[in-house]
Image (cartoon, rainbow, N blue to C red; front, side, top):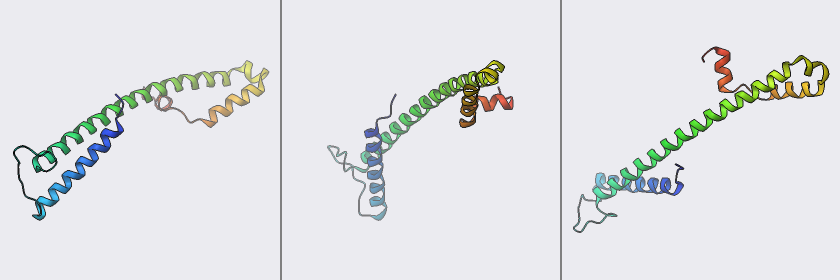
Length: 128
């Protein structure tokens, strides 16, 4: 579920209105009044409730997006690890070393250029 940027911005605005409401109540410039009919932009309980609800929705959205991105990163890390393993095997292949020195040099350069993936680092440490 992609994060809706506009929802996050609206949540931040609602939180700012909530802070203003609390500051006004604390300073005495605003009274705790509940109108009939309700005035969502003026009734302190509704302003604060709106801010909390929007903040909760925004945080839940960000948490879900973070989980989705972590899962995707894990899949990419495994794929990168498989690719690096294949490149390493080719670079270690004696036939390639002896008969295809340009290719061998390129493969060794690739391995030096890219650091080990998280999965490779774990494998090297024996964490798997």
